[in-house]
Image (tube, rainbow, N blue to C red; front, top):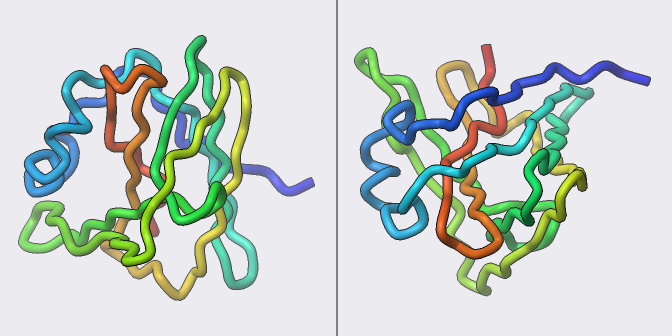
Length: 142
């Protein structure tokens, strides 16, 4: 079994860590940060990056995506000494809300071609009642 690199968040994430552009665009989704962010683990394979997200809270987490294994993606690029919003998935066919129950793990797969140095991939997770939400780092090429 291949080892996963844990990118676990031990503290409540502040959206200030991410591009100011995203915090302004996603303001409605980020009213208050998640009380307990999910655990994120990544693994690289030949042509893809596998991201496992585990809900370590006692309440469900929600996310938008085109399918349960393709969350809505936001990405940033490091330019002139800071992270700047560079793009996001806008699905003209629509996005659906998906649920991760407590202690449940979901797996996302992303093509490695998408990743470059100085680029990172994010998504937004919200509490089951929509009162809390945080931008969560899914992957960053080092």
